[in-house]
Image (tube, helix red, strand yellow):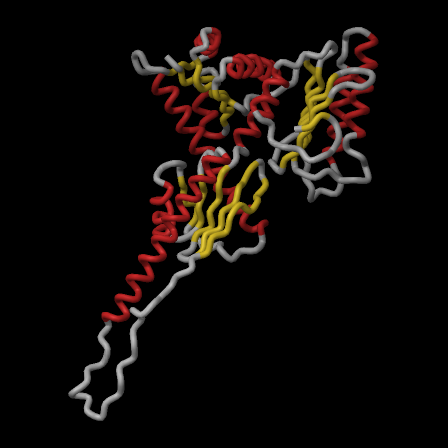
Length: 375
């Protein structure tokens, strides 16, 4: 993330999140989440953004000076999206200091899909949707696996990039089958048996297996260095299992599809498969998290909690290890409450996961919030 401008932007790290968490400008912050559909040339997002910026100015009930500062900040946000140059990315996020001049700004862009544009006027950045996007778009490894070639990609925030491409070099020396010599007397010379074929095939498979296992070790190194949550694989299940044996549980490896994509040169087609796999895996992970928290909360002496009062108390005591909450709650006052919970969790180095779908529905029976506790 960079201050101001439309330059290259990076995924916010913990230091940047902490900086935003502590940021309290004198007149507050306009937090902007812009949902862009690049295929819609009519740019309805631009109309919606202007509408919400105007609404934020109209809603200002404070001093005349703050209203002027809001108007000036809204104009700076509009100029961030020049009419002549369509923005890259499907989602733009900005945190803009409310000031008449020279207000500080943080902007980032991502290829993550977002349902709606949102403008929020508060005394601090509205970080919850950002954390939701970072959780949904957390970096993972992507493998295209075949018997003699493996391609490794990284998927992060909706973008797919090349990492490594390994190809086996298999040497087949003198143990290849030799053709038998012809003889005028077939009874005296026997033809070559099928054992030659069998030996060749067995050694070829053994070499392929060693190749996949060695590549698995290299994939594990990349996963450690890049802090991948998991690795998603495409290919034959047996070959993926051979590669997994080389990873040795250093990172989870999930088979997304039994399909050969090794020669697929179009990143767009592979990206569609990856995004579908990411969606399924994220929902599965969230459901498991919610179930674990609820089970722990319902177990005597279990390290889990549900319900707002208990969660707030646990956060105050620094006991929360992982905060889990419903990301689909529509009410604005709920979002303000979420911000308070998220801030308390981040300040005590707790993990934060907003959940959707089935996991969110499960949470609503418990006030929309749960936690796994440290003790």
